[in-house]
Amino acid sequence: MYDIFILLSSMVYIHFGHLLLSIMTATWSMGPGTLEVPLSLFAKNRERLAKKLKNGQIVILQGGDSINHYDTDVEYVFRQESYFTWICGVREPGCYFALDVGTKKAYLFVPRLPEEYEVWMGKRLSCENFQNIYAVDEVHYVDELQDVLKQLKPEVLLTLSGPNTDSGLTAKEAIFEGINEFNVDNETLFPIIAELRVIKTPEEIEVMRYVCKTSSDAHKQVMLHAKPGLLEYQCESVFLDHCYRVGGCRHVSYTCICGSGDNSAILHYGHAAAPNCKMIQNGDMCLFDMGANYAGYAADITCSFPANGKFTDDQKLIYEAVLAARDAVFREAKPGVKWTDMHLTANRAMLEHLKGGNLLKGDVEEMIKHGIHGILQPHGLGHLLGLDVHDVGGYLPHCPPRPDGPLARLRTARLLQPGMVLTVEPGCYFIPKLLEGALNNQEQAGFFNWDVVDKYRGFGGVRIEDDVLITESGIEDLTSVPRTVAEIEAFMANGANFK
Image (cartoon, rainbow, N blue to C red):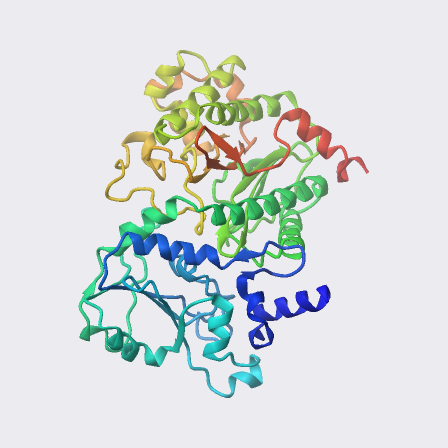
């Protein structure tokens, strides 16, 4: 009987929802061994949103559409728009969703598919099937959207429109035939729903624990597999395999960064012009930044380790400087603390450690004043994490504005609050362009012992990135990978380098 239940549960995802009993629609998963996500997660999000709005208002969101590869008939693998996922968890393209604030009723609108769909794509689901699968109050076809909304007689339709402060792009505002017949407000909804996404519910946190655990386990598999002589993308493939085959994560949250040697100083390595294709050499540091995605929720984890499983003294100096930065944040992060202060706390700890290793000289506060921290770590300490890997809410109107100087690269300057999930990702990189700039800058050059720095040209970089939940008293680290030098060497002793 258990096997039959799993089979039927799997059929939800491949569009045979009509075979399910209603009790089976209380959760969604990718099958045996993967997390069952309660549909109450999305119902609670709708409840939270309705409490912030007024009777007479109806929220209307438009989901994502299938997108073709240029002019071909091949589609990209569909990924749902994040706000749409947050409010209803619907996984299919071409849908709309409405929430009547006064009645709290949820309305899903799905495409009316042609009969030919069943020849190529499988059985078409009825509106009743969709209602059972997603636990919403009513389901109609998209071509009925205007008529249904007229019957509800809203005083105002709330659509979503606002800037993403990471990408500079604007959230997709719902449009449909006949929308001009309604009173539409596209300003009220965005700051409210974006702020709600910042603070995660217990149900959301459980999903994030799962995707971070899956990603951590996948990183550990990579560490056991990695050795000199492999290509970077072969290590990437180990990560992707584990996340999908074991964790049920069809997607990763961003393009995997698998830099070895000098590539580990390229912050967004792995793009089309540099597709993780270098052969890993003996003596390389590997910097692998990869995160799975489950039910729309993202992980974002970076592991740095020596390709041959043993740290040299030079590698150990840089790695432990970055680890000192991470640990300083772990000690001090708690509700009410400024994220900008955490960034500087991490920078101070790293610079102090590098000074102790004779790579830097002078007063650490003077180093900060003259931007040395921005030379060695040109990115921010971390970012909000959730349905987007760089999650929304960093610079909403009520939040502290973006700082000036090196801190301008921070993706948020907020005070920490319980329920936030963020990355903590200090790094130290030897980026030729930045080092040359510092060497030619009289105010900066004197802080470096250049004969020591010269040993690190071509070294690349180190980043340590954990995903953390802000609790009432501090943090919970959602990441579980070897972190100290001793832990990494002991773990990799069971891997490919020693077999």
